[in-house]
Image (tube, rainbow over the protein chains, first blue to last red):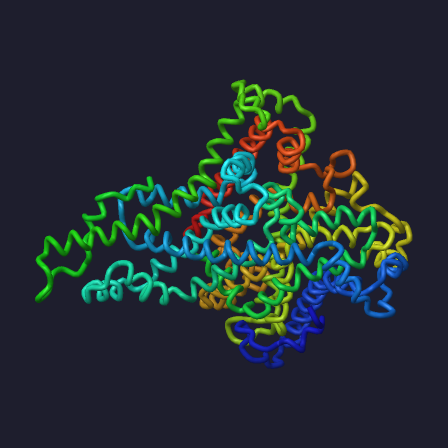
Length: 301
Length: 337
């Protein structure tokens, strides 16, 4: 989210195999290349402009925001962030999001890895049916399930609570996690597990001490994808939690945005948006190579 | 089906007795118990939880759709297909369904076409140097294009509703700055003619980069000899892209089409952020918003579930259609999702 200039960032491009030499059709090559660059720069501007504009607006007073969309902030309004964090409750929502996402991510990864391991490595009658039901959970619209889910959580006394959200997040991330990890466990060499069994290791030890560490790249990739997905989750909290004290960040932002229409603290609204984006953006930039790799792996397979 | 039962004993530990170990029979039984306990804990328990929280609600919703249940009373009067008959004559629902189908037709097609075009520019747009042609700065383009994917959809919606803000939004600011004064104060999300298109742009903006990255990787995993052969046959870049790259990544395109279709039929977050009340004259109202308000504002849970069933039927029909078309076109391999 920094500069728009292309040449600064040409490092590490696997598709590039050295610069082309100027040959007889070098000029035509150059024209095609220039056109491609022009289109891609335009595209980059379209992607980055709204985001940069949001960051810029988050430092302006509401009066400045109304005066002109382009004017730079006369002084950096850090108060917008303070107001968003405290008055609008973004701080509370942020903590709730961290709690719910951490809990759900840990549970999802544990349950998903264990189930995927069994489904990938132990043939048993009915395995195909179980696998199909896992895929079904990926395909059906969640909207069909939310009404009964609401009452299930209500009966369990988990409606409007953070543990209830953790349970729901986990259940709905489970099919994706299992589906994705199955292929990783299938690809692990079976001989290692057999050798462990020969040495008298129990199935349990084989899983925790041998197979799980070997699947670490796959686990990391799925964990990152799940983090992004869970952090961005919107429908489940909106339906299953109506207690403002337990709002998660996405839900809190939605409610803040609908209120901002009346009280018009647009500076704080933009600041809240930036606050919501930054954690995921940091995770992405730190892990972007691995994330892109895993997305590709998961979908090309 | 969570009972994984005794049949696992038929698949004993591969290691059969060696020197000094306990007698075969005892050892096998122990291995069987060991494995069964693992399967019950690892698969049985989590899968039961998944059935309770995800699969059971799906079937329950289907049953509720046949009742006039209002949720907060214990009675669930059975009305057969009454809710469906009512939906068939409900102009609001039908128009919401029409809007959802519009999204289904437009969003995946435009998004993935743009993604493929950009992916082609990145992989073919550079100077030829040997087989694979890459473009300068393609790493940078890929990193930046991925940004919208990690921004929460609700925040994307909030940001764009400000971009579209008639008085001080980025869009009208830009348009008037280049001299298009008739866009001063133009309400993009408040005008019947533009609200839906403006919304579609936001969804497309969110996903083009994501699928571009995916397609770039898929194109790069195509055997370079195929491109060489096409070039020797005199094919230019454009023809190589259409005749070699596109068939080469057809499996990925199919998977992407399914995902984008499911997303377009949902679209709830974007709609709630941009026009929570359904837009001018209901022009951006979609089925998921109708389900939400019918259930949680009006308490008509039976009717809402019937809408959910209709949505699920459309989703399944769409997925089936994509796979059928892909098979007709001879797409092989690829993911099952």
